[in-house]
Length: 463
Image 1 (cartoon, rainbow, N blue to C red):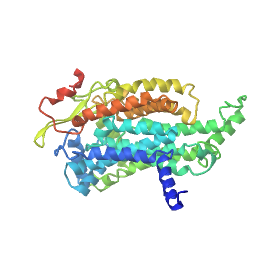
Image 2 (image 1 turned 180 degrees about the vertical axis):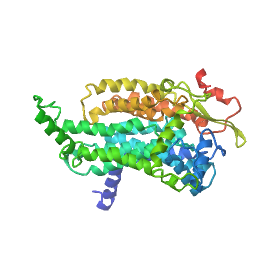
Image 3 (image 1 turned 45 degrees about the horizontal axis):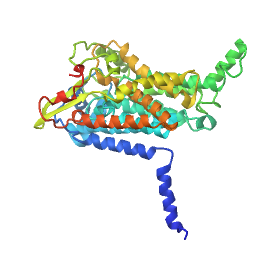
Image 4 (image 1 turned 120 degrees about the horizontal axis):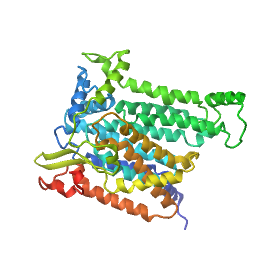
């Protein structure tokens, strides 16, 4: 007997709900589990730890609008902490909850960005899992610091950038809104911290490159002699043509506005509360000189720190930093800022794999993703390799580590889609086991005794 339509219709709807190729629902599930794990012991320790001693007092000043504090950093991250204090109270949960929300949103956005960039369900889901368990993203989502404001908004910008670069927008109008949103979030990322500044030139450069390729201005498809008149015509087309990719309806000149001028305007707007300080309020002319002063303050931190490290040590997970170790709420607890000892090292060969897949580097669309991930990883590290700031810490690897996890997911996911699934399963299993094993020491869990840290010190440089 045939199934009645009133039963078969809901069955088909439920089947479509779970079988859709777009992994948005599974991505939401990963983000939700991440959020719930982050909530556990979020208010422990109840006192300030590590750099919270700088940023929480600065957030209190923002609430009172008294005077500047912690002037060497932009305001967005401190504004987020201030919102948490106003909503939940001036205590540990209130200080940290905004960053947990930002970390969860950023995890979702980063995963969606890789979905739209790769078109692979398994690549995006592997990335969501690897990023959620790389330790760095998790720990910085549970502390009242500024880094998650920068990283989460960067992820949102990458998501919108990936959407704007989809091939569908080369054939029909509609991508402008994603370009505008990408510029908005990139500007907010600068308002969190300056760490991602080198990456923000890339969307505009790639837009210009893809527009030239779409118009065949480099004559790859139809080689021609170089004629001055043709060069001028091509330059005009390159700047003002709209009927071509990567975003139809948006000229390169307009893209320069949304990806260049607009992010700077958004960044400057994050300083709005400073105009209302009772002492030394910000002025329209002073906001630009203040940027130079901030840079000067950044370079003035020269006093050595026990846990300071260099960028090349981050790559090999050699020098972590203790955010907390001691008695808190009656028991021994610790928070070790360390990368996942398995995934952070196992992912390094993926950079070489991406380099091999990227050649030749004239590819476009999803084929160019390996080259893009390598570029983003290198740009994230260059900021610190050439930075004059002498005191650096492992958590500054957060952006580069995120792109490293994306490269790892792309390699494993590509193999998975080709039928080679055991490397992906093995990586997920080991990553999960290490995350579970280290969970107490990255989430302020209760430890048996004062020397419990020894159980996690796999190499001497971790001490």
